[in-house]
Amino acid sequence: MIHFVSGDILLSRAQVVAHGVAPNDPMSQGLALAIRQKYPALHKDFHHWCSQQHPKPGTAWLWGAPEGVRVVHLLTQEGGYGDGARPGRATLHHVRESLRALAKMAVKENFSSVAVPRLATGVGALTWGDVLPVIEDRLGALGIPVYVYAEYRPGRIAHEPGLPAPRIATAC
Image 1: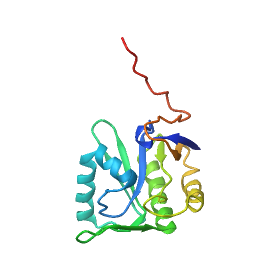
Image 2 (image 1 turned 120 degrees about the vertical axis):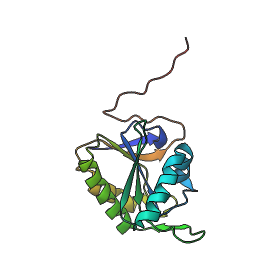
Image 3 (image 1 turned 30 degrees about the vertical axis):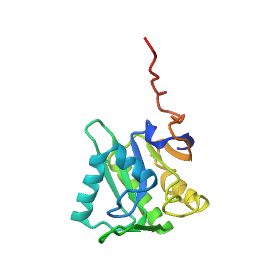
Image 4 (image 1 turned 135 degrees about the horizontal axis):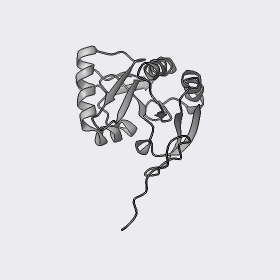
C-alpha cells in the first residue's frame, strides 16, 4: 500500500529508506549529501562496492548499520566514474529498473516498510508526473507500506500510517 506523506525522509520510521544516486556517486548534492553526512560509513562502503562491482544504472544496493538502519541506493543516474566525474541525469528506464530491483530486494529481505523520496526529480532532473506512475507500478503491489515523501519538510516527522507514532521526549 502506497502512502503519500509530507516530512523529512531522514526522520522516517520505515525499516528501509531508498534514494537515487549514480554509480560511484560523490553524494555531494541533495538527499544523497544529507545521507552521506548522517551515515559516513555508508558512503565509504558504497564506493568500495562500486570499485569492486562496477554496477550499472538500473540496479540497487542495500546498506545496513549495526543499529538497524537500512538504506537502499537506487542507481537511477548515469555517470560517477573517472576523475572528478559528476553524476548525470536520471532516466525513466533506470528508475524503472532500479525500482524493480528494490521490489525484488524487499521480498527477498522481507522488508516490513520502505520510504522513498520524489525519486530522481532533484539532481536527476526528471519530472514528478513521469516518475510517480513508475513508483506506483513497481512498488504498489509489494504488500507492505511504502511511504512516498511527496513533500519535503525539513526536520518534520511525517505521519506514516501503520507505524507507531514517534516517541516525543518530555522534560522531567
